Each structure stands twice: as C-alpha cells, then as structure tokens.
Image (cartoon, rainbow, N blue to C red; front, side, top):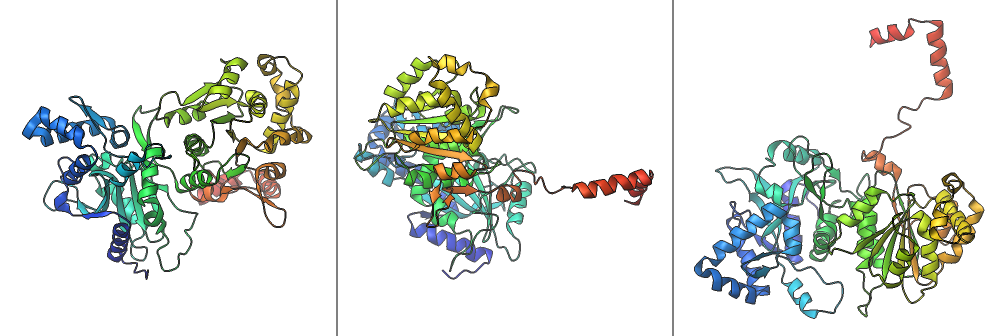
Length: 527
C-alpha cells in the first residue's frame, strides 16, 4: 500500500482494509442517534442466530415486538454497560437474547462456530453522533451487531499529529453523549502514534499510549500504526478482546466503574504466550514497574485455563498464581477475580486455608488457584506426584533473591511436619538470600507436566538461565519485554536519574553555601 498521509486518505485506507477483511460499511442513515444503535444490523443478527427466541418474543408483543426489544436493550446497556450485554445478553418475558457469539476455544459444540460467523462487524465513517443540525462527527465508529464499541479520531502527523486528536476528545467531545458511554475504548490515532482512553472525562481524560515501543517501527508500504486495523481490529482478534480482555473495574475512591482495555504490550504478551504455551516449557516475562503487570498476570491466568489442544482437551488442568507476599497481595487477588466470567473459577488459598484444602484443589480442581510463596513448595511436591495432571505456574516477581527464598523454603519444608509449621518459620529467615539453593528448584523446573511463567522487572543471571530462552551463543533472553526505558518514556514511572546529583557536585554546592551563606538567597533572587 502506497501511503498518503493526508487525514482523508488515511481514513479511506483504514476503511478499505476493514471492508476487505469482513467488515460491513455503513452510513449515517443506518445509525439511530436516539438509541445509539444500528438497529437494522442488530435485528438481522437476532433473526439469523436466534429465530426461535424471536418468534416467542413476537407471540408476546405482536406488532410492538421491535419497539419493545430495543426499549429493553437500550435500558439494559445503560444499566449494565455494553461489555456485559455482549457477554451475557439479556432476558425479557421468558426470552433470552444473545448480542454476540464469541469464537469457541474448542470444537465440542460445532453450532457455536456457525453462530460466531454470523456476528456482524461494521464501521461508519464521519459518524454524526449528535442529534442536532451540524453536530460533531467522529472519524470512525466501530460496531458489532449494531452496538457501538470503539471510536477513533484520526490525524495526520505532518499537519496536526496525534496530540490534536487527544485535544479533540478532551475539549470538543461531550462525555455525556451516549456513544462515549457505550463504547469501551476511544483511540486517538495518527499515521505514527496511537493513544487510547476507556472513559472520557473532559479535560481530566487520561490517554494511555498504545504503541509498540516509544516509537512505532517503519512498515514497508504501510503506515506505522497499521497494526491497529491489520491486527487489533481484525474480527478474530477483536472477538477475543471482547470475550477475554475487556471488563469493568471499580475505582475504590469514586466507587464508579470504567472499562479496562489492555495496553499494547499487555495484549501482545498474553497472546504470544497463549499461542506458544504447553506443559514442560518455561517462560520469563521481563516487564518493568509501570507495565500493569498485575493485569497481565490476570489475563494470562484466565487465558491459560481456557486453552485447549487439537483434541479439545485442556492444555492445563489448573493455573496456579503465586505471590511472593506472606499475605496474598490484594491487588493481584482482586484482578484475577475481577476478570472471572464464571463464578467459582478462581480459588484463593491463603493463610486461612490449610494443606488439606490445597491438596484437594490440586488433585481435583480445574480452575485458577491464587496462593502465597509459603505454599509454593507444597504445590510443586503435589504437582510432581500427579504427573497425569498439567499445571501452569505463574510466579509474580521471580527475581533471583525470591527464587532463592523459594529454594530455602523448600529445604525448610523437608524438616517440618506440616504446612502450618512451615508457615510459622521466622519471617526474617525467609528474607535471607542463598543463591546456591536455586539448584533445588531446578529439579522441579523440568517436570513434563508443569510450565513456569516467571514475571520480573529485574531478571538476574540465574533467573534468566532458569526461565529464559537460549540463543545460538548460549545467552538467555526473556520471552517478552517491556523495558524500564519505555515505562519512563511513557510516563508510568519516574526517571530516578533525572535529578541525580553526584557526590562531588553536592560537595561543591555545600562548600559554596558554607563559604557564602547568602549564596542560596542570592540565587533565588536571581531566578
């Protein structure tokens, strides 16, 4: 594709690509501003996928069936949010309607594949979303089965840049408009950079980077940001986002909820791991502070428990998430549970539960277990003794000192009679690092029925060797990386060296002040 970076050409290229890959091109005449829907496509989807339910519905409401259907649908969306309605549908007068069919992760029910193929993805350009003459427009609106899910503002880098699109969202878009409350992500996009927001709040709106790095790489004969429509918005990928990634999170301060959408590196990391993962393989994920590691772990845990092989069997019978805290980190626990779609999928084995609870879960469970480092050795011992069951073990902050603690703990466990006795060991002793004891964990690392997924911001040599990928020169590398440089550049963590002052400079400054007590005062007057 020859790239013309004018905004309109950019917009036309995106639309043309989406249409070529299965999207329907729709016009403003198809959009109903009052309901914030493309009602024709919504009804088509219902008629094509759930004809029996619709006939039942018509028997109750007769000629008013369509009016009643949309009245109930709009109310349910306003009350519960778009993502919940897409996942769970709604009920009325004994009829149960689905508004979206996810792509099945196994072939046990072939009928679901047919229904997935009947989902209708559509795009409207220059979307007139305000119900008034000469109202504002959106460059692109993305819909599924007539429900709006994504808005996009486009700008060309040469004349305006992505910052202009961000400003437009903040200053010219009324967050009270229904379409902004219905959609779960809003992209500000140029031909070079992409930013996203999940909730518009006027000038307080926070846009997060959605780029491959601090700079997006050059793409031959295409735009640097073409990955959004070539990959992220493709029907299979977007369907997985709706099914497995997007959810609503409650703000503890405001008590309000907002949609959560993964940043690019989070989505990339989880998807690559889910493609590659199988028992006996181990993975090191080097994600800096500020990467949103807790959410990445939560998405990965749910993805692994729902991964099936070609014979439609689970790849992992159980996913175990290990925190290095004596009391499980509440944020990690909450994140894993907040993505839970089926109640009971996540089980927490904390200090309130004993070794019998843990053994029972490992022997018979088929869910996600969140547990502490103190219970980790028992988990490995049980997993080793159950070779017919397959486990994915996700370790939070697996740097060498903590791995050393794990190994030390294993050694201590052998000299205790129960899990409770092991947990009562002196906490200070647990914090001592003994690199030599890392050798003990290696006997577990190569078990054929276990995969380790080790997350750390600062991998050391031994951790890289244990979980990393070797190259032809014998050096080990992480499976996926989000660097501290990128986290600093994107503003998620502070650069500790930014105001760094050497000892020599500090000494000279102190000496100057001592020699001239008015130095600091004069300096302030001069500023």
